[in-house]
Length: 523
Image (cartoon, rainbow, N blue to C red; front, top):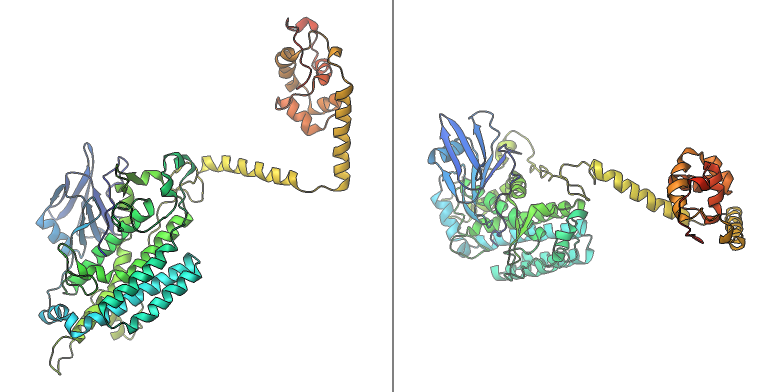
């Protein structure tokens, strides 16, 4: 399965040209990559917003140069500079497809390439297909079991994986792989996708869950219709580019595959080689979307419903490329060795394929036990779950944390009030409510002076209550101190039968009253 189409154009908040985790991503129009007096000069941007950087041959920290878009210039001297520094170059179209890859390349071995071309006749293709799909299904089983917590799906995938070593044809292996994929992606269908609260009004409803891996726009994974599928498509494109670089470094032809049939403008062997790594990408994306929210600013929806990644977010995802390169390396070397073992050679030719990607033989030659480097994938920037601000350490930024804490405490208070009380507390509350109800029943609105109405209370009495003490208000009204504090702050308006007592407390009289004769019998 080839790379998918995902990337949109540059936003105005593009990052500066600084390699992160060894990866530098250029986006925009008028991109330039050239060499000046031994330094690599790069430039990108849109319109007047341009970014430039200059790298020397020492301590540049550059391992991958990723260019998104084909509007610009890359000089031959720049490609030579990157090759001398063992840095790879990847050119991606704006739709996410891989246009070109180049890096440290080893001269091809005629015997090895001949064995690759004859893999379907020699039996090497069947052996390679079994191994690659077995690893892929094993990875999907682990994701379903440990991350999706779907034991039924994991057991189903395990049954398909058990049939792979018995498969006697490539077509049978493809069938088992497709059946396992159907069960695997069905387990993703109801996965919820979270966005910050402020973004929910701008988020299409179908973006809030994973849905199907197949896009409704194309009937295939191409042209993703929601953010998670768009992220998967872009990361798969990076894995495909890393697989193509690894194949070329080993001297193989990336276009001659064993599982994927030959197709124009497709590196079928790279697509084969990336199959075992797909489950690692899936696990990374699953952890990403389940442990934090996605920002609406990272995505763009075209008029046909195609969801694309904004370039700044795509640039951050590109930082994971070295991790996928390390994951592809061992499989690429194993495939090369499997092809070599089927190549026609004399009995005294004991030569084997060098392990230039993993340095396995160098490690074993020194008496060390070789272990695959499993460096963690760079973490993406966390955002606030309320406002979407980037760079937070916890779930919320500082400003939103205060409001969230206030809402949480209010909810906790409601829960506390709902807790069952003791008989003594219930009796006290019941007596207080009964006394106030009786007092309200026996009180007559006509007992109020004509000048003491609602307007007078709000304009003359309420502002003066702030000068009184809570204890004085509590004693005057015969209410609790917490309620008296609410009355003093204006958050509670007492019954009209209390207005006269409060007027005496603050020294209000008819001389300072209002002319309105309207009375309020109660609140």
